[in-house]
Image (tube, rainbow, N blue to C red; front, side):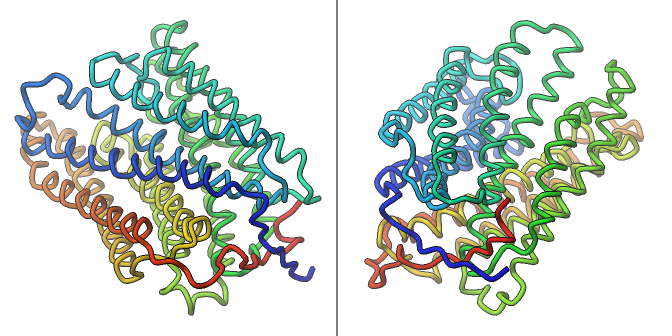
Length: 468
């Protein structure tokens, strides 16, 4: 079917609301990854910041993890959805006025949660550490945001439903179910080994049924829009969506092999982890197919560079995730930095990069300001890319080395001594990533007044390729 051009209509978006959400996202971009550098420094200097219980590793680490997931990524994602959803539905957000109180509730609640973690109030389950009252407020905010976006989709003027909207609906509904499952039911009602098994499901649902489909919302919208090319394949988008929905809910136990959890449950998680290659390969084929005929302008297209680089990180990170679910590979990698390499390559290297790509696309269109300097922003991109690439390589290498050392009977302390040089490079790679993000934000916030009316640019959409 022929390409259909839809003119973007600024009347359906609330630029100030989007800007406010993104500004708060910038705060978390500066805070959470920088805290990660501080935490990593404690590996080489255990006495660093000693003396205050609030600054110990055990309290800072969950702040860093939750700060990246719910602060950096989720806040930017929600802000970008206030741009994406009206554009693809051609109607204003339902109950748009809710966006401002939700902005303050979301972010001040996160601040309260991080302060609580620093003070030692912790539920003890990864990605479910916040105190109960914080969890309840987050859930209420998520439910309100879900109502806003889903009702907007239901009231859309566009007859078709773009791929990004499939994933938006899925991400919100899955998260609304998963959040009370992990923070209310598992934390308080299920003891023993069943608690560990179900927590494995919960934390993987955070990654696979919230962060992953949310990330797909961003790249499925911003990649075709930024390179002005139709989405490559409708069939691949269908396969990617339904295979993610079918396979991912069963992978959560694959970090608990060689445990008292039933063998049949472990085996199912292994099989489903390998089958995740299907959605990964199909969506990546879609993304790289969309770039066909557009590579000549890739060097000057900062949004596309973030999105495609994130896709490459996604390929590597998901390959790690599927293969480390195998019993033979998990034996030398479990409880080592190999797993940390996998999480950084996916959460930061993929989804935070996709969010930054979306921000680079949207910010000039809602502020009327171009980048302060493309060269400066491009340096930021390369510092981020070099940092996360080095971190992934370093952590993978040291994780394998540590694992095989322990398998040969080496003492735990001896393995730590061997790891120390790697941890130096890990900290330096984190600093590179932080400086790169600082340069990106500097270029955005201090940008020049745009002479062109960027918001009126047309977005090419291929009806047969992106709607159902």
